[in-house]
Length: 154
Image 1 (cartoon, rainbow, N blue to C red):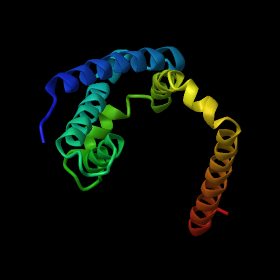
Image 2: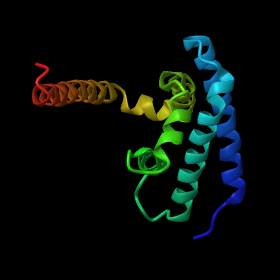
Image 3: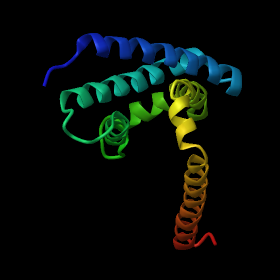
């Protein structure tokens, strides 16, 4: 198990560029201050690079880097953790919806060079997409209904 430092450095550079785009997007879209959000964005980038590092450190564990990042953020923000207050104070300055534009743009770019594969799948992709959308919608609705019922809201 060998860490590719060059690859990790390139990923860090890309994360920094994405972080800058996110800060600009949240300034334009939500009128949030860029300066106030920089510490939170640094934390998000640090967690992301940590997740990529862990993923490259133990490649045999079938867990995506996103899961490692989510786990790290969850642990840092748990109410009983001494890190929770400052972690949430800074990351709450980063508008979540501001992160979606660059992420979706990069997802679109990554799919863009796979057009030949998508053409071979043709109509089957539509059926799978519709099934996923319907399943996600009804799954979310069922969970929401259960939680709201348990809380006595409905």
